[in-house]
Every structure is written in structure tokens, then in C-alpha cells.
Length: 164
Image 1 (tube, rainbow, N blue to C red):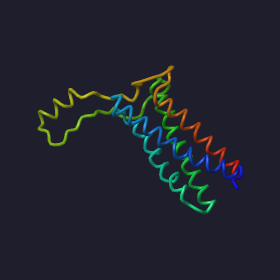
Image 2: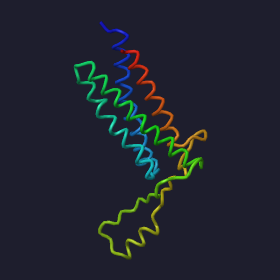
Image 3: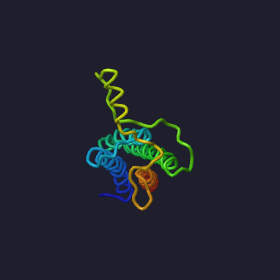
Image 4: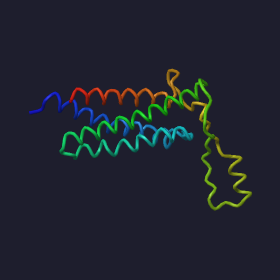
């Protein structure tokens, strides 16, 4: 018999797994299909989501409830870290504060001569961290990551609290 406690925990586990998976799929899709190359801060937002997938996935296979709950909470905290980085990045894009990273280029210099390297660098697009490549309703991708990640993390933690 399924109780509200186990339903809440199960729902939290699914959100903890599907949210970072969906956000990473969106990031990779916008890069590979949409041609929106990530800046350095965009990459920073992806790492906590990759990390969150591990405990969220593992929680599906752990029998002991306390360990399973701890794994889901760990995933939620990692998702929140990505959201916090998203807030920092969005703030840089909107000019609320100064950025703290170099811009990123998509150029691959492996095996090129000096002249070819210079030519590749001079013709490569530079991906600036302080300029949003895409927005919807005035919200950048970093802003959407912040909203969805922090909202998702809070939702997971509330569901886990109800499950206790």
C-alpha cells in the first residue's frame, strides 16, 4: 500500500532525476541544434546538474529509506548550486554586477601551425558571459536555469520534508 509519505518521496526522487536531465538536454540541444555555444559560466551551471544525476539515479535502487532520502536531498542541493550559479550568471548578463570570468571561444588549436592558430583565433566567435545569446520574455537561459533549478530544489526539499 502506497502512503502519502512514499508518494512524496518517490515524486521528489523523480524530480531530482528528471529536472537536471531535462535542463542538460536543453543546454545540449541549444548548443548542438540551436548553435548557442556556452560561455564559461554556462559550463559552470552544467557541472552540478551532472553531479545531481548520480545520487538521484542511485536513490532509485537503494532499499534503505534513510540513505535513499539522503541521496535525494543531496541531488536537490546540487541542483540548487546550479541555480545559484545561474543567478550569478544572469546578474552578469543583466549588468547587475561585474563578471568574474574570461570569455570563451570555440576554437580548437590542436595540431595547428602558429599562423593557422592565429587565423583560427581571429575568426573564431567569442562567447561572452555578459551578453545573453537568447532570451524569452526578457529572461536569459541562465535566468531560466536559476528559476527552474532553485524552484525544483525547493520543491524536492518540501516533498522530502512531507515524507518525513
